Image 1 (cartoon, helix red, strand yellow):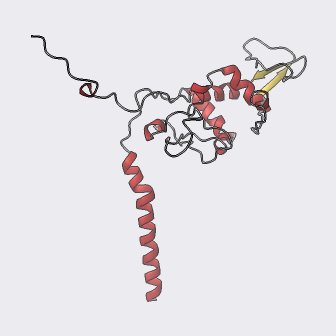
Image 2: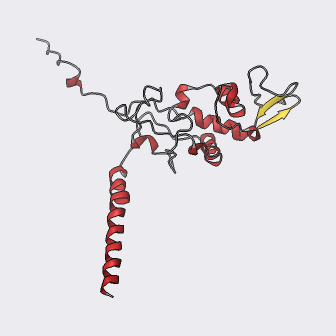
Image 3: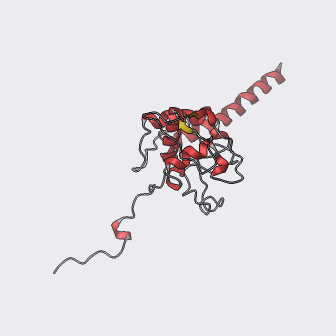
Length: 206
């Protein structure tokens, strides 16, 4: 009986320590984080696109967390500065990801702002990135004999679309692209240096 009590007590202590280290302390560190000045809340269309991003498993192959220059070549790859907690204030849940089968998307909206490129890339990735292993998403589009008023026709490279027909983006594809275009974290995250650090103070007029 005594050994059972010791085992239970040890398990409870271990659980308490792990909870404190992995949950309580990190929460206390970031609970007062405020969004950087340049970060804007998602629009309704971007939120819908974010749901499409999640539903299609994009988070399994793409991260949204560039590393510091001392920890990896992310900056040299053009993925931008290292992310900070404030970058994710509006992300519930966050989509940091853990695999990089594809490139990091933290700044894809800045690297590739073209709506036409994103739509075509979703329809047929290899038409834009030869050798890409990204799956295509034809169910986000509709093939028609002719476009109708209000349709968003996908501008594909020659030979990549159905012959004699047009490819039209469904609302889900348009929302997803708006979400991707909104992933632009090129704003500064550090306050400007104090005036005294910018150079010697000007002498008062005599």
